[in-house]
Length: 68
Image 1 (cartoon, rainbow, N blue to C red):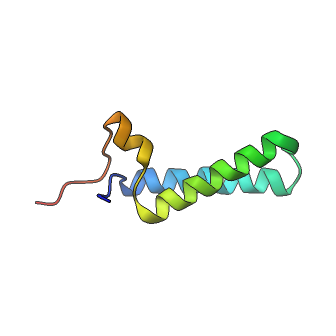
Image 2 (image 1 turned 90 degrees about the horizontal axis):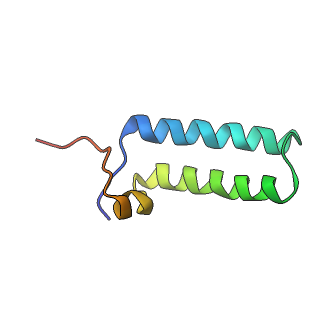
């Protein structure tokens, strides 16, 4: 797996995941929508930790800085 996520992208994903988790655990969002968003937050954190997004590969996006 080649890395395709830059640092800014990873930070944004982790911040979104934190916001979703806080909203879920404070019962602002609940039910099916809450569970779906919580799973999405987990995917955001996982892809941020491994610096690889499969969707980026399909679309052809690469935000990782190139090494010289």
